[in-house]
Image 1 (tube, rainbow over the protein chains, first blue to last red):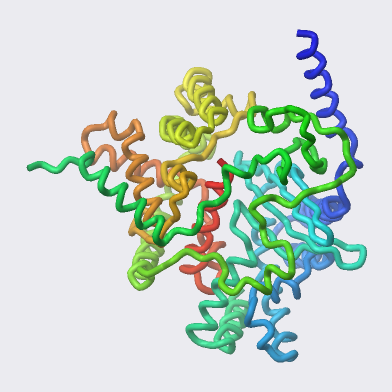
Image 2: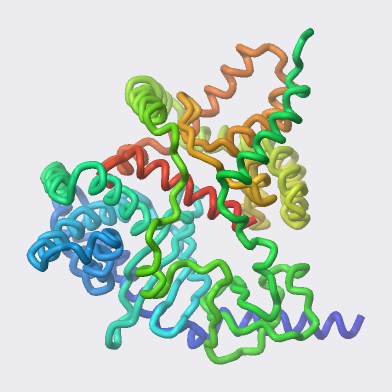
Length: 200
Length: 300
């Protein structure tokens, strides 16, 4: 009985320490948290509310996100083996197109949900790579599991992939792009990306 | 001779297992993910890092994840056993991404198109009208009600995956929500006790047992599925109380339709957003389905 009590006390202590001492969180998580907090503050800013300020909000969020997301790495991974076959001009053309598509997706998602709470869960660091799992609670009682994959470049941990409920972004686009390139051509893919950007 | 559904089930299951083994990917190492000396990622409620589990005699599996005492180590972290592709080298080596086989693609594409039109021409207008009339809290209440009703499905599937903690949680949820939660409309188990629903179904159970999805099927109306998950759906119908409580098929259908409309009314806009983010929505949906199922099976 005594032992159980001691174990319980230790458990609660470790629990408390885990919650109170932020120093346990690693660098990748800290940097990610910084970015997310900035985005949330833009959304919460009363001066930027309303549809008239939508463009300004979008631009601000884009700038913040640009600091954290490695678009070139994402574009490269989404083309996978087709990337090496591209000329430098094609690569230079592709990355902004891909970025435009994703930025729109991200902005829509971020604005669409009313975030209640974000819980940073597990962080796995393996050399230069880190994966951070996050639980997002929305106003409608939904729980969304998001996992960010980051890579260290200099002193920054940049996101090169993220998955929502197990569905990875890069993976998903990789399959789509692969199919389009195999069925038609890379040029067709670029054309469709451009049409998509124009639509959005 | 009248062929009953039950008589067909056993040979069908055998067929399924055979095809699953033929087409399916190797079973995910779910059983091995709790090796105390290997890499285990343990959840903490806070944003703390994970440290290498010490062989301290704690039965890692038996305890609640938050109850594991870890000495506050330096952030020494171990990669998870089922590797998400972190490394550069792995990306280069990988020729074909892990996609689901799709031999029925032409037919599936047609049904995808059908479902797409069904959504925009029928489901969305009805759900929008319903949404305009019924307040959100009530609709959330109905969602909880229907979810509560299908507890046996989740409960049995937890047991079939030897997830006793999950089964226990589902039981607590059923009892608490049915009584305190006014027949299931409220969810005090989640709001007060923070016991969340464990989304399990027979398809996931089959996946847990090592049966691969075989190939992708898009059913009209029912939507995305796989060969394995179709059998899973059939199995779930057997476990669903609605099947037994409601003898009249039209009434049962009406209730399921209502559930679907109610659910959709809470998620209008998601499908549109999804389509806007893709170049080929059929493929995106297929792969998203596949990845999501893998994720659910892994997180038993």
